Amino acid sequence: MKTLYRARRVYTLSHPQTGDWLLVDERHVERVGVGESPAADRLVELPGTVILPGFIDTHVHLTGTGLSRLGIPIERARSAEELLGLVAEELTHDPAKVLAHGFDESHWERPELPSGPDLDDLGDVPIILVRADGHLSLANAPALKESGAIELEGVERDEVGRPTGVVRREANERVQRWFHEALTDHEIRELQLQAAALAASRGVTCVHEMAIPAWRGRRDVEVLMEHRAQLPVDVVPYVADKDIPYVMDLGLETIGGDLSLDGSIGARTAALSEPYRDDRGRGALYEREDGLAEFFHNAHLAGFQVAVHAIGDAAIEQAVGAWERVYRALDSRGRRHFRARRHRIEHFELCTADQVERAAALGLAISIQPAFDAAWGHPGALYDRRLGSERAAAMNPFGALLARGLLLGAGSDSPITELDPMEGLWALETHHDPSQRMNREEAVRLFTAGSAALAHLEDKKGRLRPGMQADFAAYDADPVSADDPRGIRPVLTVSRGREVFAT
Ligand SMILES: [Zn+2]
Image 1 (cartoon, protein in one colour):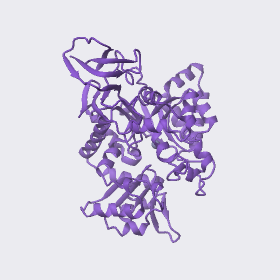
Image 2: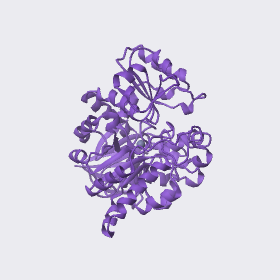
Image 3: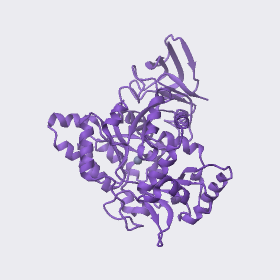
Image 4: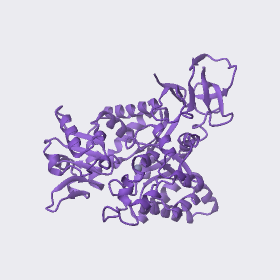
């Protein structure tokens, strides 16, 4: 069964660079060409459109994305009062408990969070409000008590010992996990399906799922493994679990993913070598150095591609240093295999020039989140306030990472930023440091071929050439030549030959 798609232009990101038709044989690209088109069983006319390879998002939390689409839109709050107001409104519908994601006080005029008593005044229902970056939550007394988080590290307290409502670290993990563990398998499947459908509607045909059992329980990824073949887009799961036999039993060749070596700049839990500018702390490392090196060693020997989350320079140092220990113990053949494995670091935001060099020497791959820079990286924004302008200015040096030969792919960290590659493209072109910007074509390559290579899928995805998987989307407006690509949406998305989204 062959299908011919005819468009105004087909960008292949390969050779030839463009065509005006694309012939698909079941799940694969057979040919791209110009002019007279070959015979096919089915013809799909897409007059005036341009076709691009499907975008690949290297860092997505599917269940969280589904939940944040359904939940209270607390990302819209512009003050503590508005945040409380949105929750109060939700409580008029009598929910048994509330979890909402996405408030970001760094965009408020007065960035003070509501207090513990403010939250408790809302009612007796457990309430959990997760900050945009996920590494801090607000939890009222019933949520702290029922989840058991009250006993754990990370519950912030005032001078008389009362919880302020702010939870980080273990307590934050627990309140979120407590909520997620009460979801039924059916609910989890539906949330993941919603998120995958959203991806398809944005021209994304493959996502790297960052499952975090500590935040969402193991069942979250187990449910995903059962139905991922039926989802509208391809899912490459990474599980933040150090239990190697467990992840092996899931049938995966990847491990770690968003396994946190530290937290986030916004929650002041990213691990820094020098203190925050607006706080005395330096964040904290979540893993012990020996334990991490041992995990890396064992996971590498077991054949896994390993990924970890590291944002602050101290966490990046820990990741790079632990990999160097593993690498040094290998012979030259072992080192070649090591570099070919493309172990990943997610985020890699506050990296030093020295760390960039060392990561490049190890063949590490970096999963960047361009939209973080757009949201928080510009002068006067969150990173600047937390770290001071000198450190903030040096963050996310995307151009330098590429120039040093690091393999890069890009993602949204949805629901932390929108699952929308157009926002990512724009962020890459408007980086806070003009010397680190990319042009549109480089940005598109990063979100397609680059992201494919991060999961060792460069021979299957990211370009439209014969034999590659038929992953693409057609657009009325051209995302490559439009002045501002934001808001451009596909009219048709095809994932492995299946038409998974159409307007
Ligand atoms: Zn992360």
